Amino acid sequence: PNSPIDSTDFSHTSGGPRTVDDHPKGYPKLAAFMNSSDNFLMCRRFDFLHTRVLLHRQDELAEMEKALIAMDDEDQELDQLSLESRRRDDQRPEEPSRKSLMTKIDGKLKDYDDLITRIRRNVAIPRPLDRDYGSLYKWIDDIKPLCRVESKFIKYQDDIIALAEKQEGGWFDGVLEDTLSIFPRPFTRASSSPSPATPVFLRAPPTNTLRPQFILSSSEERKKTDDEYVQLYSKYRVDVLARLILTVVAVVLLMVPTAVLFLVPEHGILKIMLIMIFTMLFSAALSVFTKAKRHEMFAATAA
Image (cartoon, rainbow, N blue to C red; front, top):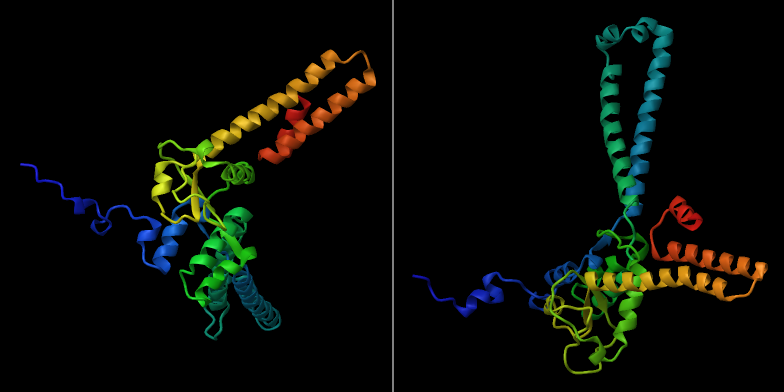
């Protein structure tokens, strides 16, 4: 027979999903908050340390290179045959031998090449949007989950990298979220379909006493935290709204000049100016709202 389901089976202590507020203050709470959205997944790159180690390894190799050249020059005068025969050279009893030095150089080169590869990979990681960094900074500054010394990592903005890939038009999505946040609550009520969240940390709580239910925020996002200072927006819904707006902009930029040229009397210079202005506006829209490459922008504009 099936055993009855105890309500404690769904409690947080039974291993079920926990909200940010259910975690104890400290690293658990900070980790939960950063994990609440991909936009908060960021850390330091330690550019200075990478460069410092790179310079150290570089000088070690330079020193070994100098020793190898000195050994070659010495053998050129005393034992030319050892330079012409690797087998003879490997049989040399004295230390350091060229063989042992080459082995050390090979090991150092592997470490050096691995370091270069890691630095190149880290440099390619993008920085977070100022909006996302600012949200995390404000949350840490207000909640103070860590001690003062260990919270200083968030102050190195130039050294912070985003672990999640930037969304196309991420800054525009942020503008939409900030704009919709100032609308009256009745116009921004939400449905309950779950989707990934984009966080916004507010300086001040909502004006009403109830939890705001934005049209861009699902019930799943609202369950992640009870903090009235935090609003979580659905990436999917924000992306849909952004695409609708951009579609309207694209249609306007294409149709308005056509309509104007149809209505304006025969004035060649005026028509040329209109075509030039709207072509420039269309190119600017491509550059600002998309990640189009230069040749893609050129092809789209020429079409």
